[in-house]
Length: 452
Image 1 (cartoon, rainbow, N blue to C red):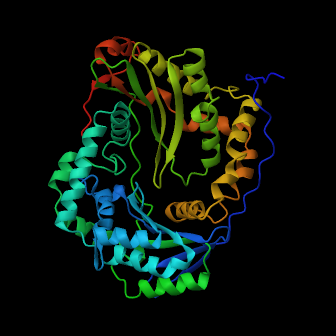
Image 2 (cartoon, one colour):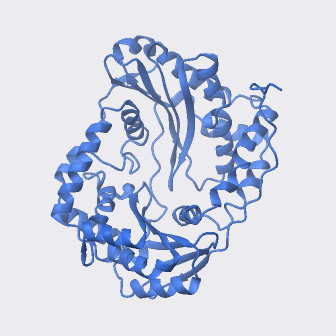
Image 3 (cartoon, rainbow, N blue to C red):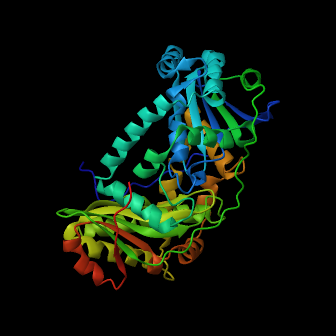
């Protein structure tokens, strides 16, 4: 029997999600500790979440939060960088530290019977980081090289330009790596000052998920963080929203480029929006899955791209809607026009068919339960609850909330939260080839050179 490759399979019923109960306690030092037992595998994943991230970077030092996080494994306590790496290896532990827009996280995963020594290392990293000049120089050199590499990559240039033009001077308006100028000017005192101002028990939550006993976790957390002080506190939800986009085309010239990298979008609601589920579903049918409208249009009907996708990047205060794709250089203006047309079309009355909505709902719900299989996944999910101040049943409610949506509700969100007429458009490509056609869109065009 020959398989029919042109008919989508009928989806089955979604599996319900039952997120494990979270046990919450607070140490004498003021550190909130969340424990999520999961005994499937004899390991645990711990994430120390600080309620500050790249949005807290000083205006003149973009990238400082991420640089500070990157320096944490350059030595702590009685160990230098090599000794710290050796200690982690001997425990079979994995460590990572990173700063996103809204939080800084230190993640440590280890075998369950190594809970106590792993917590010793975690406490050293947080309470006794070295932050040496030597470590700063080494990390700075690596980041400078990384920025030089990224500046030659069209997709990264487009991402950087899009974020800066959509959010402008808002705290969300820069990437985590910052700029070469900021890196070159940073001194070690700024790193230590940033850490002291933003790292403390009042700004942190320790999430531990896996094959652990709640009493053991609380005992070890109290032991290693006893006496930890500081005045840092979580950032409040008060922050000015980004300004609306102005519909400008920003063109970064790459002479001779055979393709154009495109970003089309605008500010959007935050993760805490009451329309979250409708926005996620709207995104799925517009550009969030392979059979979505924009991907079918640009890839299958016009054959000018290998793929196009949309996303709502929802952050603590606000977010950004964007369509990302790379197209043939001579089809740049056509692709932009079609993306805007699809965004406008989905806003029209009666534009969304019930069958299209059901297909999008199925794409979101049928595999959703897979996001909560491992200790690491549970810990990362709990970090979302911490960062966005979400209710404990937020993941349990996802499938039923998505399934109950009606065509009218999704259409209402499309009308309210998609703004193709004022969308920011970023084009990274050969200006000589694509500008004449872009001018026919009737929008202002500004040539840019994003800072790296």
